[in-house]
Image 1 (spheres, rainbow, N blue to C red):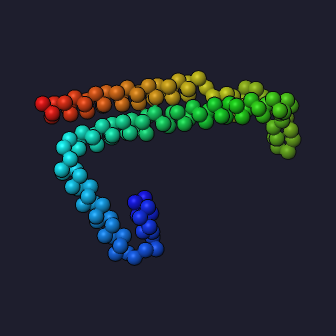
Image 2: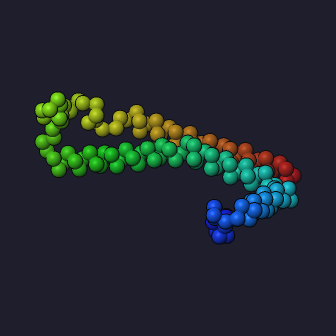
Length: 139
């Protein structure tokens, strides 16, 4: 990312990329050593981002996909009242109890809600612990 913004791409001289990466590593090292309470900043960013990326985003994406799937299924069924399924060279009407034509189950949605709740609770608890640690060090 930084290399691209500075105009140093993969086709640039190898030594230029090595120097740029080395300078970035040294700069990050100085920031981590000389900025007070830097560990708490990183800890706070970590607790928020890990809980959001691990526990909140996947079930939210799953719920969005389920809603789109349900909308697509409704639009297909309303556009085509007589739905047929090809079966061994012939066409037969789809059985409503067929597992492939069922709407998403309530247990899937419940599991998504549980995971989202767990992620929010984990984010709040780890944020509180990080702030307590920061306040303890400041005293």
